[in-house]
Length: 244
Image 1 (cartoon, rainbow, N blue to C red):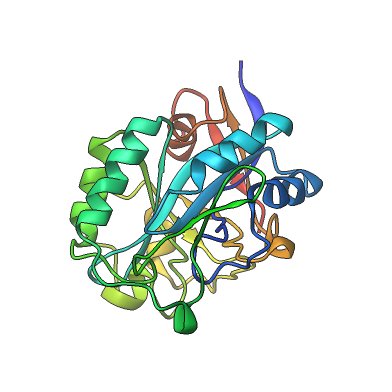
Image 2: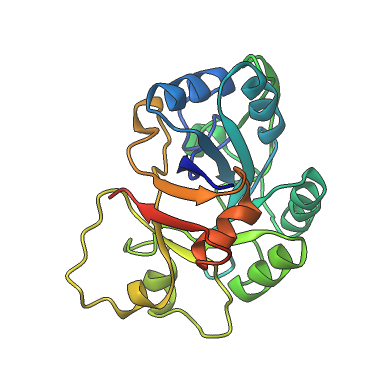
């Protein structure tokens, strides 16, 4: 039996240096529930270290959490990856950390807070999470899929840090599951890449008030990345619609 889920899967926490300090687990979930979001994704830059805290906090809310991250590839393309199981998520994190160099400078880039489910500070991540890894989009896509992940090109319409801004096209040998369009993006019908893959819209929230400003409705068997992948492909009766 299929159910309808309102999903907003591109959201940062206070771990991302560009994320607001108020983006702690309980605040994020409360804001999402208030907007009617039933499934939220956590996608900090190059790190998953706050995913477990959000999942723990979600035990007290009527909402599901899909863990992921927003990878910055060698080409400086932002790519969203999602995993249903912690093993795949943490194993992919190890791959990213092994290929991410440099140290954060909070005075320039912002603090990178690792927190518990109540928002208590556990640590400051010292890595340069805003930086690019030394592996390209092809390897990121391949390694994520090998671990059972879902791969979506982030904000593909943007003029920076998108697959279109960096490459000008979507390479046929990069097996993306979908492309994400920015909130309230409007097409003139001339972007051929919009028609090449399923297109989703998420909030890319860095502040609480941005959560739930864009979403998709997915008709799936469960609130998981695997079920969403079926919906993106129109398989087994699963389907989705974008809100805006």
